[in-house]
Amino acid sequence: MALLTRIRGPRDLDRLTPGQLAVLAEEIRGFLVEEVSKTGGHLGPNLGVVELTIALHRVFESPKDRILFDTGHQSYVHKILTGRQDFSKLRTKGGLSGYPSRAESEHDVIENSHASTVLGYADGLAKANQLQGHDDRHVVAVIGDGALTGGMAWEALNNIAESSDRPVIIVVNDNERSYSPTIGGLANHLATLRTTQGYERFLAWGKDALQRTPVVGQSLFETLHGAKKGLKDFIAPQGMFEDLGLKYVGPIDGHDVQALESALRRARGFGGPVIVHCLTQKGRGYRAAEQNEEDRFHAVPVIHPDTGLPVKSSGGQDWTSVFGEEMVAIGRERKDVVGITAAMLHPVGLAPFAKEFPDRIYDVGIAEQHAAVSAAGLATGGLHPVVAVYATFLNRAFDQVLMDVALHKCGVTFVLDRAGVTGSDGASHNGMWDMSILQVVPGLRLAAPRDADQLRAQLREAVAVEDAPTVVRYSKGTVGPAFPAVARIGGMDVLRDGAVDGVDADVLIVSVGAMAQTCLDAAEKLAAQGISATVVDPRWVKPVDPELAPLAARHRAVVTVEDNGRAGGVGAAISQALRDAGVDVPLRDLGIPQSFLDHATRDQILAEIGLTADGVAEKTAALVAKVSLDPAAVL
Image 1 (cartoon, rainbow, N blue to C red):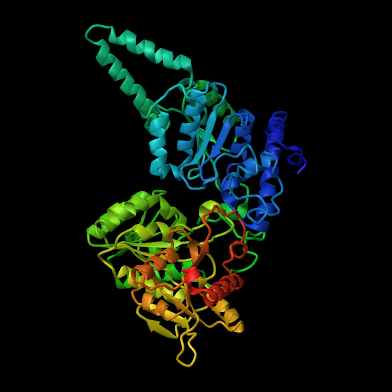
Image 2 (cartoon, rainbow, N blue to C red; image 1 turned 180 degrees about the vertical axis):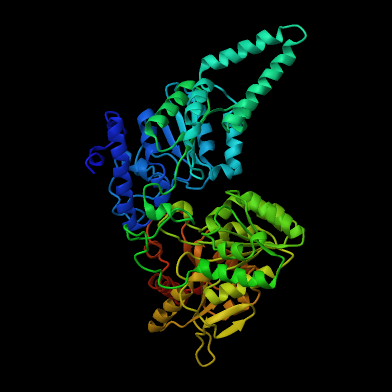
């Protein structure tokens, strides 16, 4: 690591020779494997962009020039080259974020880690530079070929192309193809020609001269222009971008620093929007990643660096695999059930379904909005689609859930993986918004299963609904033990009956989804203080079960506990339902504060925000104490 330890900032790269740059690239790959294997993280994508990131920082002057990363999971090399080489606590509390972070460095710009947004940022930043007279600044947007499947990327491209004098360099990190040396020299030459102002002036002159030629001039120009376009499309795949008004450079070997620098310098000098198409290999240089056919080690847990194998098992079945198994079982029974994923077939657990029913799975790319509307079409056509996405990504399709699925009473089931606090991926990946935003959707039904048995049961209940959207949401990680019900009231499961000798408990605790263990433990702690508690799981949290209000009326206080934002969440909906029913029982809603939570483990975050057994017991006891002193004061 002799060279790497000398890199404290991007300008330290300037004095390195081509030979030293090659050595540095290998040192960075070794560093990534060694460090990320200890913490887990996005290993494969970063192994694939080592040379590209080096070239970017040698050609452009960050932070004056803005280097933007779409999604940001491929920014580890960028962090290394901008003075952040302590990866010992990567994605853990107090350590480096797994994504760009403005709090970490002036070199980081976008933190949202939701795909297909970088080109919109680039468009806005370029306009800001132009309006403020910052003619010496460039905007560089790095976007993967996968993210280009998102509609927002094409909306932004359309706007970027609107002006030919705003310097936006769009670097397409294409890791789905191998580099073909046979086209490198010719493509490089044509790229140089296409991105010179002289070439543009030549085309303009040719058009004017030919169109002034009587009779044959216009038709000759159109013929020659068509031939030129056809030849260029045959040689290199830039036609689609040039039709938008964007210059195209490439394809470039994404692992050749000199070729990358040459392409980026030409693009920088053009003065307008340019596409630089780079072919990279995900997982490059790490045999275990290169041989992983599923995702080239896109994201890994803690692994043995020599073998790439996990250091330890998860300790039990996870929520995602439970869903995946049940989907296959449902698929065998119902030929009308189909699956939809937004470029996350394996992460959301639909791979087993796809393997058994390849004709009944649709991967729409990073296009959650389209997934929802396509699902509405499938439902209208007589099928029952199950759309599986991460909870945080459903935010992007809210309008379609509301106006295309719910308005038309389509039987579509949305399955939300990684709901609630997810932890290590930071603010943008916590699925803490869904039970709030979905509360406003008329007719929608929302289930929050507490364990694997309930996930299986409620998924089946959801796909049985054909006249309204249904949602099933669950946590990240190991599913945990089953929590059997001791009774059922309406559609709610009673997990603990706190009544003693026919006398109702002091407090009713409404446990939502994965908070069951926490609530049951809190009830035990309250019992030790002489406070009796009944714990119920509503199972379906929207709509509020009509039996909940009369049940609440039999208690001195109600506490709701949810792994979701407090604003507009389940607690708020229950509070409204109690008021509508004329039940004036004091209620305390416990949940996630409406703030962007820093990365840490799930348990650490839950402890910080008080969603632990101790925290719930403490707040519940305080509420009961206030009710005992002055019931009216807490209403």
